[in-house]
Amino acid sequence: MSDHPVTIKAVHPPLPERLRELVASDLGSYVLAVVLIVLPLLVSGSWMFAIGVCFANAIGVLAVSFLVRYGGEVSIGHAFFAAVGAYSVAILDTRFGLSLLVSVPLALVLGVVTGVAFAWPSRKLSGIYLAVSTMALALAVPELINNTDALTGGYEGLYVSKPLIPGLPMSFQRYYVALAVLIAVVFALARFRHSRQGLTILLSKAHPAAADAFGTRQVWARCAVLGISGGIAALCGAMLAFAGSTVSPSGFTLWSSIFLLVGSVVSFYGLTLARALIGGAFLTLVPQFLSASGAWIPVFYGLALLGMILLGHYLPRLKEMMARHGGTA
Amino acid sequence: MNDVLRDLFPLAWSGMITGCLYALGAMGLVMIFKSSRVVNFSHGNVAGFAAFLIYGFSSGVLLDLSWGAAVLLTIVAVVAIACLTYAVIAPLVFDSDLTATIATLGIGLIAQGATLLIFGADIVSLDLPIPRFSTSVLGLRITGYDLTVLGVAIVTIGALFFVIDYTKLGIAFRAISENSFAAEVCGLNLRSIHLFSWVVAAVLGVVGALLIVPTTFLSVTTVAAFMLQAFAAAVIGGFASLPGSLIGGILIGVLMNLFTFYVSPQFSSTFLLCIILLALNIFPNGILARVGGSRV
Image (cartoon, each protein chain N blue to C red):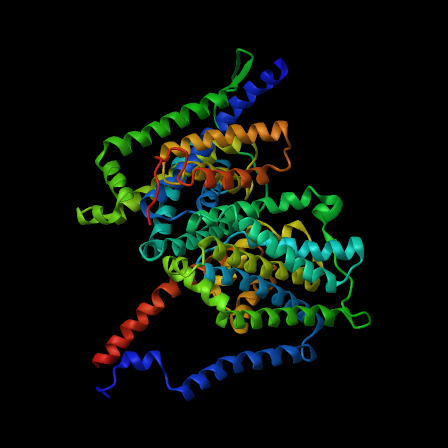
């Protein structure tokens, strides 16, 4: 074995092995998707509702994770984009009687536009400076909603009731539409990873100077990442409105943004279906289980956030240590 | 014209008073950022928890102490919390400042939950034991509260600048904020300086919270909301300059006051967002930054 340097082997694993890995990772997602599709046959209505909301939150977690993965930036303001999506659905539904067929594309477009609109003035910021300005963004949301109550319904919020396909039971629609959008987002992100644009953006995150030399400007990369992330977050909001059936300003506060970040950290910024679901489940099911004692929710989220961050910090070190001990033994 | 001036003067005055408090909060954030490159998002929630502790210790909910004893005990508790917080995030600080910053969000969540668990979601009032006093100077109504805030702010900030400018600890702090690697090579203990800044910041937060609460009431979100203006103040100062954050605090106080009076009280957070974005774009390194360019 000493004739073959280990490093080269690690970079180019044999083709069959690579194929098997590819199939295995995709297979997991396919199996999970099939399980989720047949799940409504097994669980009761209230669970179906909760899982539908969980799908919506999973999309939001993906939006935050996408920003971390492709932009290297942390946002605590994604509730803003989610609110944009949620209110496009809710306003078109209640004021104009239009269904998701119109409102979801609109939500996506508005999310991308607001993402880019926010990215442009903050294009020179990074790291904590960007995090602080996203925080300011999140803070502005509830009062913007409350003070345009002729359109948004103010404190009371709006009720979303228009079905996508008339005739089918609404509870099934709330579940399956959210699931379909989640799967679509996960699939699109998986394709994006191997696309030309995806690789360009990753290059500009990892080696800004090299990306500049190849003609990818930092500003363009930032606008692209925030635009896509904002679009995904708007889809999350749209699905929160549809699957959760109501929208109100209390759902889009600074804390909701922070919870989305918590979900993203808990899923280790993963962009796969399973990881997104872990984050979404964390956001949806923890409050459900702790509903009797609401004050424990922030404590639990805080502990989980710290725990996952410390785990992420120590796990590689522990593994290294174990590998070293294993190697010498 | 005369009317505008008549309103403007008192508005600027009261804005300056609250601005001093924003500056106190902002300086805590900047102290921590200067030494350890971490933005402490838990600042507001921990300070709010401290305000509730003072209320709890002095009102008989937890203990029945005099106001002074309650404040002392709370400061001890807050220093302990600051040390504990730093102990938790210490391993992350040298690894990635962004990760450590996210971790402070976790601390903030825990502090908020602890406040809810111990004191509930009720609104309480917490007053300062100062004599009711009010006088009029040049048509300006000045209350005992105003003078107390001004006095406490001047003494606290003066003491802080004195420590940073003239003591060994302060010199070490400045050395670390200029170049932490060189400071470490010279034999300074980074950890103890970090801890110093976290403790000072926590105490500044308590002072700020104590002084801001009498103007409104005390609820779980009051102090956290107040600290958001402190964030804006720190941003205007460039997040790494103590005098800058002092000016930023007063600027934010006055501007917010003018905005809520002349434009609209409902869109104050949106206004704050615009200020932050503008400030970050026009003076990315703060209003007191030396003018200079970067080279590729």
